[in-house]
Image (cartoon, rainbow, N blue to C red):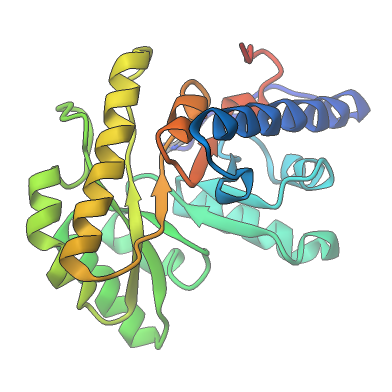
Length: 248
Ligand SMILES: *Cc1c(COP(=O)(O)O)cnc(C)c1O
């Protein structure tokens, strides 16, 4: 099922909202970096565009957004096809987030800068095979269920430790780090989840000898916490695109 779209007019007021909101988001990211003694250049904010039409991505581009993320292959294709017709957006980056079914792998590989959602060894092998068949190397993240919530997919931290060397050796994919999602509406649990992800990434670096530089952590409700805990990639949907979302 596709994500329902926000009911918004793509007018001048919305264009101004996108630019103001982006500025506020980047200010929050900078402040979180300062608190953590980090440089703001270490963090890239992705505009998660699943709840808007492709034309809104163009307005977001004009507001300064350069990187987008989509969670459904079909919606990703719509956005990529649109961006290809807009010369302004030629350099736009798109990432794939969210569950990936095996029969949709071909719609994603080679078209995204980063695939965030390698959630099992089985999926990793399937993606590896497809990439090899297409002669490409796809940068990927392991999706890890750090919080241990039943509802979340991904490797458990123990499974990630056990599998990482084999995954790092797979041809056609390049492991760049890990992605995780925190429990909703619980700042302490979010912080524990993100610090756990950071520590796990350290362990995986030690096991593989790979740099694994990317920590994809943080969404609208918890991105400042994620940045304080070391996130390098925040995935921002509602806060970016929804005027009704209150940025506190
Ligand atoms: C939708 C989505 C986001 C963005 O969520 P917001 O709370 O709207 O910022 C981030 N990551 C994934 C995997 C998503 O599906």
